[in-house]
Image (cartoon, rainbow, N blue to C red; front, side, top):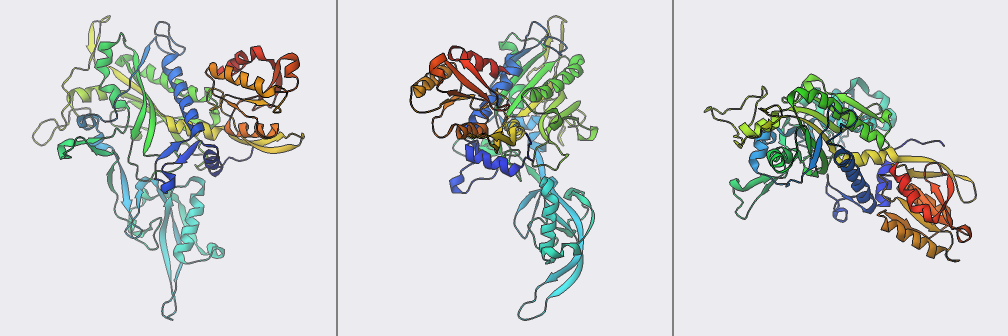
Length: 553
């Protein structure tokens, strides 16, 4: 089978056509940065969440040491509220530091995230049309042409924007003298020499300024300054502020993890690349607490374990990379951070986008909520009067080790994954175009989603070959038995069998089961494998067990 090149446009079109993802509020023109999951997308994302929870929380052993772990450990889950006390975000640093730089264009009235704009120097003769019968003018100009980073299409977009700026037709593109390489706008010393992505003239961009990413809201009816609150930009802080509650109410001992899946909100300046960068998204996070002298080993363990999770569910290791942050990339509190990155098809070949971060956060978070906001040297930040800039809770969030008879503030390892990004990565990885025989045995191009069976939205499809001779009744019984076993399956009796296969290949159903003329004779059915196209006969009384075994993968 030959696989054709994957493209993001094809994946997006399939998601809309088959009910994986829709633009939010689409009938009103949509709202940028927000997405709705359709019936199949809801099942897929739920399977991603369930697999994460089962593998990270359910499948561990607090008595025996899990494979690769420095010692045995416990994992527990919580579900914290989306709106928390405003002081949480002040002590965590989000209130003061959680921002991106943005630039505005005074001509187009559009706003851009500074680090998302790329450009290149271009020189050519700029032509302008005359008005009122006057001849046009021309002027040799060298300007910095910009566009929003569009991966492999960035260069083509720059050419199109340069042609428009210089007033040239496409056939004269060779008249443009490109100088230097494509580079981020933030590396340009003087923005007055740049042409904004949607501008027709030079120098329309403002100087970059900070833009806080937290969504602000109001509590209560009065709406005064004291009623201001924020939608959480991450789920992590809910686990930190509940550290003492979990220790006191549960029988957990260090090392242990607190885990949570939940919605977060960030007011992104330029949401883009489908669901990769959205304003509302779902996180799957672990805050793993351990002794300071063991934290380096736990950091390595969680880096490796989280990377292996993606490959175990079908993402090729050649599409993933584990990138350790350089020293200058690290947050001021971070001892070490590694990103698990995936080669999304909307990126330039060779580039990777972040799927998950695994951070060694030291004791920064617990200490911040105990004492107040800390500075770059992990010292308490003071205002001009020598008072804490943002006062902490004053609560003791240390841990007492009753075996070693010592008290200390635990270190934290944080594997933080995005449920939406993971779902998008599994979609992109699964998208395949190959050839398969049709009903007449002739090879035809087919589109399929090669989901790992644990992630597939529909686990199996049951087909009666024809609508008579008792086949629909037998298929309906099999369907009912599968549903009783907790499997999300589909019953389909419309159209030729080949067309039914194609429909379920395209939504990623791993197994199609056909009730045919032989079924009445020997009580067997045909089970077809989506990927290999292999067909085998399986007795009906062993069918549920067979499919459940295959789905464990």
